[in-house]
Image (cartoon, rainbow, N blue to C red):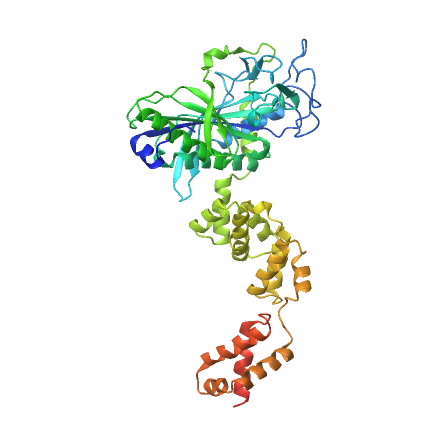
Length: 500
């Protein structure tokens, strides 16, 4: 691992500047320029047509739905939508591009000059300026055999799967992100998370980062002060989780700071991120745009999205995540801090679904942010990965509302659900956890408790109502916590009055 400066020292000595290039695979049925299926998985090299492989004589045709999705993204990111734009050839040779060029957009993107307001952990809003969002096609996937960590270095052979070649992409490029300071890693991760939420909300992509639906290239540079010219940047390629984005930025700041402090120079290059230790390593010297020899794609006509179509798409956009959070916070009566905690925990959708199932918002929040959040944290998984369904939570809270369970018993039932013992009602029945509701049985236990400690009766009769607590405790112990404590207290006071 390279020499590193302590993070606090690095951001005290240097001003970090970020740049993020986020690629999102669009959820169309077919590819960007041909009728091959746009699907995940499948046997290698089966989702193909001659266009996917760039065979001689094959001609591309633009996917209209992909263009619509690109416009949706541009509008959601407050971009201007071009009245005229065209595709270009980005020339470079690599085995995952059979044509030796990628069909992309260069100086005429479909969307440009936008911004995205990002809410940080503490509620601060940080605005990220967006330079452009352009359409392009994805490349195939290389698998390197015999090398370390699946990388090409040291590999004895490589296999290429072209199923992904031609999958429609939108690449969103920021302007230099300045002013983040020590919060640069958080800003980068939250920006990509906000984008992911928008992609899902507007229905353009499943945006599953573990499948590579969303990938980020993370550019980092350092300069002595905010007034100094921009420093030399590095680009860490294809980082595909929020945690990894945070770690990649943090590592590059520490590494570059150590290089600059020792009198060295940062090399403009691409770098690889290593999940196992959060480090980055050198890839290749960074190529400038002119080295790709961009020129207009001669086989595709320019696009001229009509203003009427653009406005139709704008009018059909669903509620965006920020507006949705504000609405739900008001409807549910959550404070700003409570809602931030919900969002940061990834619980918003789950709570909304639980409320839609008939559970009170406060109760839904209690379960997802309490017992379940603790369980997820202990297992280092997301809430969605827990073996509990929204329907289980709705049923559990219904049993509490009906008086079949108290909170203590409900927590035990939830433990059983998480352990795979069945639904809440099945767990409660199997473990014998339902509240004792037979008042005759309760009175018998109460009488035993009062007989064992008759002073409780005299104290209550003397006006010391708090003395009932001792009897309630005894009854709860005798019933293994399966009685309704409030009802037990009422019965204790009634019994004491009757004996007066």
